[in-house]
Image: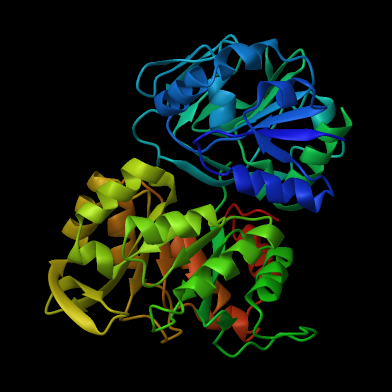
Length: 193
Length: 251
């Protein structure tokens, strides 16, 4: 199976690559449109700031390429947020795949939402063998609200989308690559979709 | 619900763990990768690797080690010890560390916190603070707790968070090594003052101390070293105990 990780200037590309290698997949880290179009799976990781990341994607023409991809596509953390319409983080226009606007957590909560939290309303083959009693690792200050595209919901004072899906596009707010055996199972499920 | 985190800390010197480790069935007792994996399997939520290598030349060993840890470990880990510059941090993050912790260098040059937060994001910048109570006030210590500064702990932490620190690792030197329990008062004060997560460190001796620091000390995470290394408390047992005491943990 040919798996590509989108190369851009937003962190943790290597953590995702390591997690895939532990599943015996050697991913290619690339921003080459031809390779991305012909991959069986595309992973879009990200730790960083929304406007800087979108600026880079536009420079490389990836803002047009990504929404047109047809194979199973997985955005992680900032990756999920960039797949939404817009983000309150520096008022950034995003890719518009998911029909929600990303918001900042309200004051009064510890920000970032950092650590292991569970999720409910699991609604996707991604969660085969996973239960709401399982925990995944989050680190984020912005969130995608719950919508009809939510396939997992987490409670941190307010409820938000732990994961979303639309057609071939999947997004996870948590880091499956850092979520122990549960995360590895979810990534494995993604490879089997 | 967001759970409280249990974080074992491993001291590293020249690429090997230094503190005596009492685990059975370890092929290489000093191998940080093997020990880290073992802790992860026992239920550790994160790991902290603290490099105590004295010489600058040996720092490259740390980057090699971090790369190895990142390839093998599937939970988040923080690397600290002797980090002085944006370049040090860049090398460690590129090698796969999820977070870095800074201490003395930030006290000497607080602007470093701003630079790191701007370049890499607050979420990976942990401010480690060693604090000691003296004549009615809490002072910040540096250089592994050897040197007192004239900075007061609470104002320093407030400043650091304003500059972009994303998490506080608070070690009470009055409690560290005593096994009489964590410093609940100062930890609660810090946790209520700042809007970022606080890791309490120093003083863990029995499982009840963890209940105290989460309940009364309002800590988001608790860090310990020797009680885990010497097998006095197993992480699996500790988490069951916490859950039994109505503290939310990942089991």
